Length: 480
Image 1 (cartoon, rainbow, N blue to C red):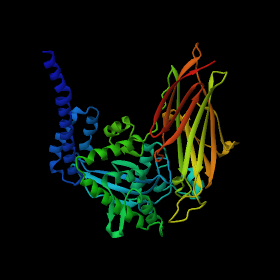
Image 2 (cartoon, rainbow, N blue to C red):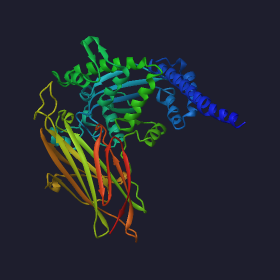
Image 3 (cartoon, rainbow, N blue to C red):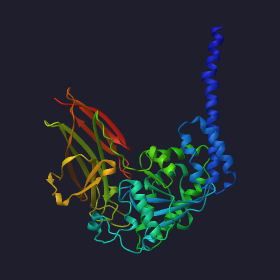
């Protein structure tokens, strides 16, 4: 009898249960493939059938069902939708990831996706009339008196930048966006792992992950002038060819595509802004909307925040060759406050001081650097290579709704050189009678930077990690 029970349990655990599990996976993938193919090939007739089949299968997948529920709204079942995908070149870092050289426009209607249109960012830029004052750092770097679409992703809080980008697109005679999505070129490179090489017959080119950036950049830089179309033409050919490959993915390739997209969402290399409040809330809750996190005060500890934001204002691709690392140290003062010192080390391995196009796109790194921290930080001081920056050369900013402050300043890292930046400030801390408090630190990683070497030291507590996504740290601070 015991032996019989043993075999029943064995069959259930190792045969029936795994079999049921893999059957559900295969059926779910099949439903996903059918819905995906119908949407991306603009065949909406079968949308309702395929969507309900997928939703039925997704009841086994818990949280993922909330994203499935958004599919009808996103794909225009309740009315046409227009989305803009910003193609950001993170070899020229900007606050939301990189310089916006081009964008793709996607239109959805009744559950089907229409033709993808790729356009150079300078086309709507050239149709904008009137005048908008630029942020002062842009004015100082480029000596121009106007704010344009190409620089509109200036706010590190992506929903804020997306609204600015949308305003400029409309002023440039584009359609009103229902959503704006920012992606960086490293995502496109990763997609080649799913699509394989792409043949561009009109250009006589075979594009893969290894030569994608070189080819795209050569066509963007060669004989470029405002209003020229060669960059949009090559990017349009690449994007359309890639979408053609993505349309033909099989059920085995779809999980690989989903894995790449999920990874880049988690690492803030894809940022999604939607105008619909319900959709926006889901993406915000998943931390995929690119927003800066609000600092929440706590009576039982000290809440801290750190966000390092770089903006390449040198009109070059120096970020191909720039590395950075961050070291933070907290010490306790006698007056019930803490002193925080942040050191940022930059290294520019560019071979030449100015770009040599089209073979070399590096050069001096002219970086407008912003550091964000709690709004209650005091006595803020900044040094570059040990020399204090005068307060008149610092740009202070407050984001009251987020309980955050920031300080910005220029840091130039010449080719073949290194720079050390130090940012120091004090924060009040209420220690209990046993001379200790909990410390909570939220670190956000800038989109466009793939990994950030980071180290935090508090007395005997040391946290050291290569950050690829936002990170939460908790420690206990002891006061001797």
